[in-house]
Amino acid sequence: MVAKLDQYSAVAGEESVAHLRQLAAPLRGLHMVHVNSTRQGGGVAEILERLVPLMNELGIDAKWEVVHGNSEFYACTKQFHNGLQGNSVEPSVRQLRAFEQVNQENAERLRATLESADIVFIHDPQPAPLLKSFAARKGKWVWRCHIDVSRPQRTIWKYLRQFVEAYDASIWSLATFAQPLGHPQFLIAPSIDPLSEKNTVLDNAEINATANRYDIDRSRPLIVQISRFDRFKDPLGVVQAYRLAKHQVPGLQLVLAGGGATDDPEGETVLSEVRAAAGDDPDIHVILLPPDAHRTINALQRLADVAVQKSLKEGFGLTVTESMWKHKPVLGGDAGGIRLQVIDHHTGFLVSTPEGVALRLRYLLDNRDRLREMGLKAHEFVRHNFLLTRHLREYLTIMVAVMNNVPGQIELAS
Image (cartoon, rainbow, N blue to C red; front, side, top):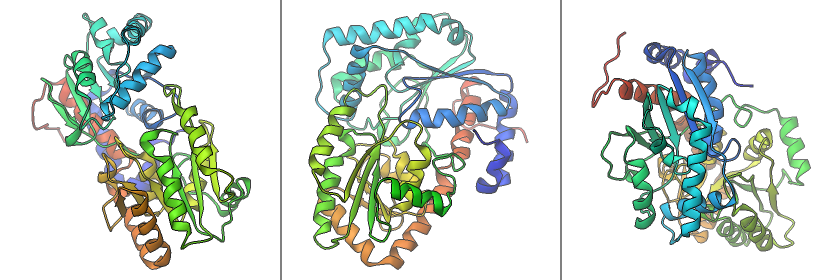
């Protein structure tokens, strides 16, 4: 169940909620549509699931649509994802044709909804070509990129740019991700919902039940990485770090948990690699979770002494922010959006190697006062910077700007 807007006052402050109502006033009745490539799995779907109902509560007629694809489409878009994050890839001509054909088919399916919309947010590369099928569109279209494209494979970006260039504006998570385009560009960091099942406060009985379900010993130290089974999340590096640290922390336990996503065809392969790396070590718990396992993830993050997100590339780590909200310092990969969240030596440590993870982990487990201090800082940092209310406020601001063709400063009536 999605929380009502007023319930956020207790977490984000009454002024923050009042500001949302003020910003939304000129947008009341506006027909807005978000489009992405999956209803379940991944941070974009999680955010839209919570954000769209709040937009509706503010009087905006907001909808969320998902493009439907086939195996060739998803194989192609996974290569785009890897290529935009710097890997060398070469999708086949057949895959590229499937990518464009699927978008054409989805354009016809969604024509009635998208053509008449006042504003459309297209999320990530998968649905990016939709725009070219809407020459008679009524509204403004914004492309929202959630990926770390700071150093993309140039051939992949050049191909995708032909679809992205024509949008009225684009949104990026970090300035270093933004690519040269001939339209206004905005920076907005993602967010978490503090009132969702994944982040709400749990009682000790539920946390204990989760520990028992997965045979986790609460009397021994535990590190947890929650993420999709994706090579960019470097789960094998986390296993290596755990083994290095265990030499000096014999009772150490590790949880690697996450779900799959319908738009990620590589997940099963990576999961098999992780299980093989874990071997028969009873203190490594590799857990494949269903899409609705929000309270389980919540409990696992609360069970952790230290959270890990050793990503090699990361647009923005929602699981980093989730763990910080639960007063956990995070050992985060020194990559992409994680640098926005993990303030080195304050809310956690930025790490680049398994050896670095093991070193910082031992330090925190040996210095519990420091661990608690960093956890408190992490929680407050999220409160001020990465809650859903801030995210919604910035989306509303951009909607006002785009709808009114405002090139610079935005003036709002009081």
